[in-house]
Length: 434
Ligand code: SF4
Image (cartoon, rainbow, N blue to C red; front, side, top):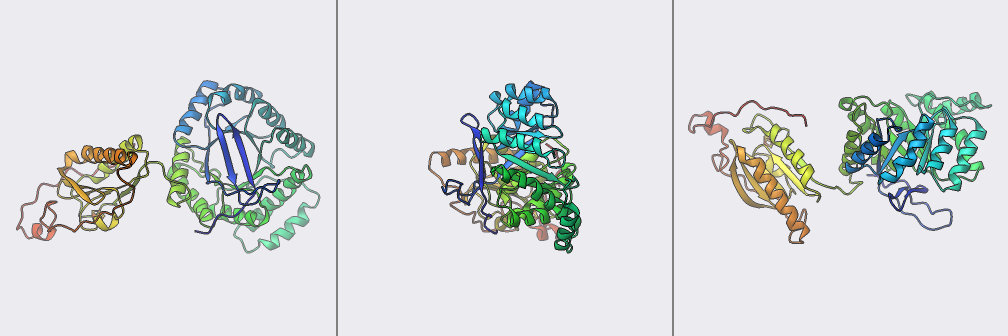
């Protein structure tokens, strides 16, 4: 992992919502030091903002899932009007996403939005942009300048600049598009700098993961503002996950990115869950809840492990808030090595499971009892951690594989040679979607 790139820092929110900081590492304009804030996770509501009750409910659901910031669309005045009722009812900074009409931005500022997003592709009039900048400056609100692939800004020297940038980026797969995005940002941000406005976050999204990586990498070298990472129109979750993780993960590994939004054509709750999991996986956020390790299963499996894993995941998500590591392994052959470091682990065998808590074997139960016993051990372990009687990750699972025909009833060779009668195979494995 490359250390985070130092940036200016922006902050927004209020006493009720808490203050969210984005970026950091470069001293503030008054000379005071800043330290990089944890990478935050954003999402955007899918419903109508003017439907106040539904919008508040959606925001609260996203916050419960872990969203640090929530953005809402404000295409009409009834949407900016609704912000006056919505904002006092939620516990998270709200970003107003403005397209096409700068008055929506002014109205959102007046209504109490904590941050504004402008798209240089559709709010281009210089005087209007200046009006929004001044309104935000008066209230110390940051602005995200979100340039998306394909939107064009008119500028006198556009062609000349594009030719220059085109040469710079000619080696890139999407060099011309990259040149346009950089040119747009340069021109747009000049307006902000002329107004001595620097509370800026930049995004430069595309649905092409390679272009996203190139664009943000280039922008990170040219501007010192914090970066909001995202792949726009990433598609349904099934494919959008890979597209998003390829782009965002690649950038974060290289120290680029200060806040992220994964975007799916699906319930935005998945954007929050997957965004957090990406940051947890890279060690960029301290995990809340269980870190679940599970074997992919193979021909050694003798229990319905897929079902067990899904059930464990679903139940632990509701009950465990300490970052304990839990391993659900299909057998004793590779399980112990792969579960190394787990606080609570189960190793399945021939329709049984042995459960360990920090290296101590606590149970050997038949398959129907594995789930309940494992959950009970996880809750009991969490209670001990909270009381200070146990420490997370303190002891490793150290298990000497048992005799092949030991407690777990493994021992395929002996079974195959007919020297041991094997219990009937369980019903076929199933995969449950939750
Ligand atoms: S833990 Fe056992 S069952 Fe699971 S993949 Fe590894 S060898 Fe196969």
